[in-house]
Length: 400
Image 1 (tube, helix red, strand yellow):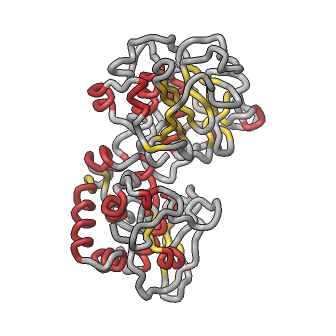
Image 2 (cartoon, rainbow, N blue to C red; image 1 turned 60 degrees about the vertical axis):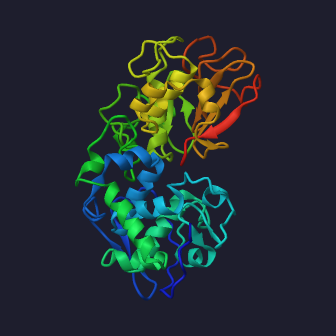
Image 3 (cartoon, rainbow, N blue to C red; image 1 turned 180 degrees about the vertical axis):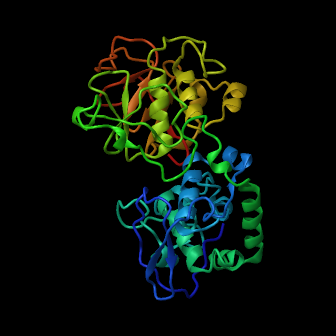
């Protein structure tokens, strides 16, 4: 991998891109000023949808970020994704410089979009408004790449913009090849609504639909919502929201986790999926297909959540029938920003998942002090620490 090459272009001050700005995008001018360009939707992002291969191989969080950044800057999302593929395989490349904070390759490039420090100083973006721009943060890196392409001539001249990103015509050809693979028919990005959580966009929970004093309204901890990005019409589970990044149990119903409004749509979808399981007993019928099962065990619970949120295809789950021991090595190492999977084979095979700070687990003996502590089956569990009865493999879905 080779990082973007520094070229003489106008300096653009870092921009905090709130992940809810909708369709407005930034135009970079030669004077380094910024101008909003409204009405960029899917057409402004190139008019292309998402191909089946793109959905299959791009982690949902990265796919969402490519689409959002492209819409914001008025670019073809697939070109951004092509760069992400060539540089770090959408954060899945094992090279430490791709994901390990502070690590760089031999050229000095780091992060999922492989920025040099000098280039990042000019074009880096704080996409989430949570601190200085971080080239190892996927949201910052992808928005930074979009900013860099826009400053380098895109969308008027993509080839020159990609060449500015990395001075090699073979690189331009490879990015264009992957972009062509990833593009789907216009509108395809919005065509798939199941499994939940796969619909990309700057989507956030629509909490404005709850009236003051309504059941579950803000005054009672949760806001009833009518729509969550990628979920509307696809689930009968209760959907209520709470401000912030952490999921919490509803004080009225321990089977309902409130969706954190500031979590990505994929994470919100996982919370909804967990809510869908709350009345099921413990049992084996979720293997190999967890969808529609009358019972779930520890591994089929995790399988169901990952399927419903669009992280693992159902066909893959049915084919491979992942068990607890298979999650010891699945995903990326270490805890995730939003989601962490804990798996073990000693003293017995077991797996559970923590979503936005809330544990979804079938095991509860002595490890649940919440309202579901006496219930078997997949439930939201409450404990102020990770259960200590096993040595856990700690991993997370890539990008989450």
